[in-house]
Amino acid sequence: MRKEIELIIKNVEKVFRGDRGKIELSLLALLADGHLLIEDIPGVGKTLLADALALSINCEFKRAQFTSDLLPSDILGSLVFSAKTGEFRFRKGPVFTNILLADEINRGSPKTQSALLEAMNDRKVTIEGRTIPLPKPFLLIATQNPVETHGTFPLPESQLDRFIMSMSLGYPGKKEEKRMLYEQKEKDPLDSIKPVIEKEEILKIQERVRKVRFSEEIADYAIAISEETRKNPMLKIGASPRATLMVTRAAQAKAFMEGRDYVVPDDVKYVIKPVLSHRLFPKRGEERKDREVIIEDVLQRVAPPG
Image (cartoon, rainbow, N blue to C red):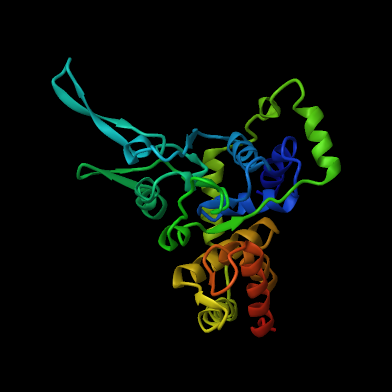
């Protein structure tokens, strides 16, 4: 399975001229059967990364551009009356797919944002009392512009907590940015992306990730980190129990990517920032870097199992 994972990473690297670690994190979210939030300013490659990952897997992929006038039914679907049959039929929305890109999710209204909660948490949606399961696998990749950007609605804490991890891409280096200019001069680089793995293989990998072992010491380590955030004087809100669960799941995926069937403390350390950064709310400072500094402080206070 490590070979297939490397194929996906190399496939995305063909078009995404950024940090390889960001590609690995986006893949970790998929293997852990979670959802990914990409936070950054417009134009740094958020959508490109999401597109490239989706196109690398032979599965159904849809994109929804969030705007202030987008309705929940535009995402979930709705009942449509057929004059021909005299009956209502359900027209599925873009959420019925394997990978959904919710582009600029914080430009959608709170009502539309919350329409995704059931899909994210339970992998199903309820329309007019009718519950319909979503296809498997199901991965939501949401991109988000900074809250200070005009015309945005910050995601509520309850929804942020349902993303297994988040990350910021940052600006590319000068060399990578120049290379991008020439690569996109005459054609869309995504045209060269072909699937390198079937969705059935992804489902098998997700099952194997869940079977990766973590010891009682690792569980205690993850819990101790969460508890430390809850009593940290710099935070208004610390890590939830769901956050602790997401830490262990992401660590399982990291261990699997490294070719191990057990989690080590370094796996937890690797995923801790992307898993907790969007879940913590400092008393001062709103930037992602402010939250990451606090997480660094927490890690210094909690000794890993020896």
